Length: 283
Length: 265
Image 1: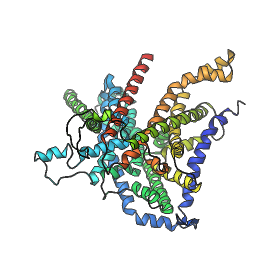
Image 2: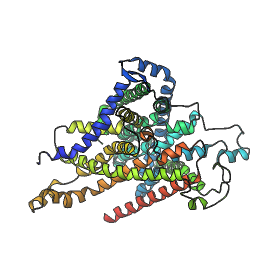
Image 3: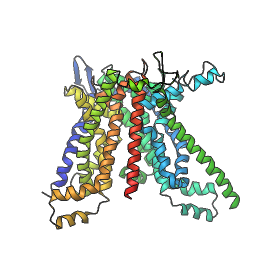
Image 4: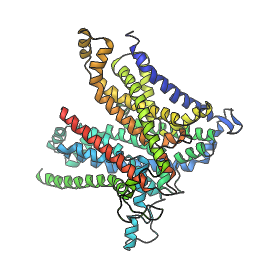
C-alpha cells in the first residue's frame, strides 16, 4: 500500500495532463498534416505543405509578433530593472508595500485593464482629448491603432512579471558584497557591472522567459489597441480556428509559433548559460 | 569615496521618484476603470466624462447577458478551483514527498503545462473536442481551466511540502495515529498555506482567462469574453462597476490575508 501511495496521488493529474494536454497536442500535430475542409472532413495526407503555406501566407504577422514581443520585452527590462533594483536595495521595511502596489493591476481582469488602457489612449479620450482641446496637440494626433500602442500595451500588461523575478534575484544579493567591491576601489558603476548585474542575471533570465512567450502569442493587445494594421499571429490563429474553420492551417501556425518560441528560448539559454535554465526550470 | 556617496543619494532619490512613476503608470488604467463606473453618460458611448452618478451601482444587474456571463465566470472559477486544488495538492504531495518511477516525466509534464503558450493550449484542446465531437460549453471551459491551473497549484504546494519535516508525521504515526489521521491532523494543516495560495492562484487564473476560453466556449460566455464581445458596440458602465467591485474585494482579501499572516508570525 505504502509503495502505491505516490502513484495513487499522481494518478488523477496524470490522467488530466495526458488526456487534455498530451493527446490534444498530438491531435494538433496530426491535424496540421491533414487536408480537407470542415464540411467534408479532414483526411491525413502528410501534407507538409500546410506549413509552407501557413508560414508563407502569414510571415508578416509572424515576424511582426516576434518584433513586438521582443520590443516589449526589452522595454520591460529597461523600465523594470531600476524599479526592482530600488525596491531590493532601498525599499527598506516597506518592500512588501511597494511589491503589493506593483501587483495592483492583477486585481483587475486582463481584458478590462487592456481596454481601460486603450480608453486612456483614445484619440478624444480624457488624456489626448483634453490636450487637444487646449491646443497642445494637433487635431490629427493619435496613438491608438499604431504599433507603439500595441507594444506599450504588451509592456504594460507583463511589466510586473519582469520586475518580480529580477527583484527576487537582487534581494538575495548580500549588500556587503557590494560594499566589499567598493572597498576594493570599484566605482559605483563598476561595482554594479561586475557584481550586482551578474548576480541578477538568473532573475533577468526568468523575467524574460515569463514575459516574451506570452507577449508574443497574445492576441488581445493587438485586437484592442492595434486597430486593423497591427494584427499579430495570435489573432490569425484565432481567426483561422474560430472563423474560417481552417484547422490544418491554424494547427500548422500554432506549431510554427511554438517551435519558433522554443528555438528562441533555447538560443537565449545557450547565450546566457545552461545553469540559468536549469535554475529557472527548477523554480 | 565621499563625493561618490552624495551622488549616490541623488541617484537614489531619482530612482525612488521613478519607482513611484512606474507604480502610477501601472495603476492609471485602474483609476480610469473606477472613475468611469461613476460616469453619468447620456449618449451610447462611455468615452467622455459627463458628471457623477451612482446609477450604475443601482442598475448593476440591468444587462441580463452581462450578469449571466459574470455568473458563468464565478461558477466555472469555483468548480475548476475545487477540482484543481484537490488533484494538484495530491500531485504536489507525490512530487514533494515521494521518490517514484515516472517522477522525472511528471516534472517535465508540469513544466510543459506551464510553458505551453495559452493560445496553443486552447487551439489543441479545441482540436481534441472537435475530433471527439464534444459540444463546447461550461464543462469544456472548466476542463481547460483545470488544465492550465493544475501545474501552478502543484508547484505552489510542492514548494511547501519540501519544507516539511518528515519527523513530524513519523511522530504522529508512532503515537498511534492512522495514516488518514496523520494526514488530516499533521500534514494537511502544515501545507495549508501552500494549498490556500494555490487555490487563490487557480481562482484568479480562471476568472481572468480569455485566450484559452475563447477556443473552448462554444456559445457560453464568461465575463472576459462578454467584455471583448462588446468592445465594438461600447462597454456599458456596469462592466466598470463589476470590475471595481472585483478589484475592491480582491484587494481586501489580500490585505486581510497579509495582516493575518503577520499576526501569526
